Image (cartoon, one colour):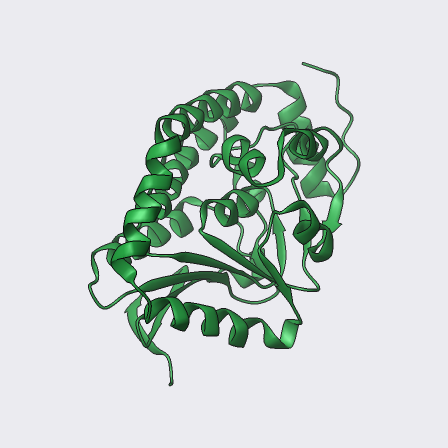
Length: 267
């Protein structure tokens, strides 16, 4: 069935097919990096699908060559107060993560390309993650002198364990889809050409399933960790603001934009 557009946004493409709503991040030139405008559109799309009785399953993906490359560090360049810029972004990002978890419908991350930083947090908040075989992953936050947000420090350890998460934030390795599958970060890896078909097959199967049962089980899973989620989001927010005030953060962001190795001094 041909996908039909539901609503028009500047930074999101939203389409529906047979009870499946696809939310596609649409800043391909910026590798779908997260900024305030993208988050605002994304939140509206999540709220729409949450209340839409015809939406049985939600698929989140990215337009172009990236799923989501994380925060748009270029937007910090002209900011007189990096910490405040981060504070405002995280406020909406946290609402988005909670919205995905509170969604009484299965949410599938269709990981189609580069994924880093907040993109990993976004995917980890989803119920299932289907990944193209060519995808590369990178934690990225600490390499810019920042700290993970979007419940990264809760959801990622729940998926892959504390030891592996510690490796990601301390060493920040670049890793591929096969490694992501082996560590439990994604549920399935498929050939790039088959990504959309296989993801939609799963989504349509779920859309035809016992959707009330899915909603109840998701709520029960949430209840097992929601107090932790809200607490962790607040701790991450405070941590990011603190990190954003450091000399290392300014150096890390500048070095990233200048495509050079940062010179951190530990303050």
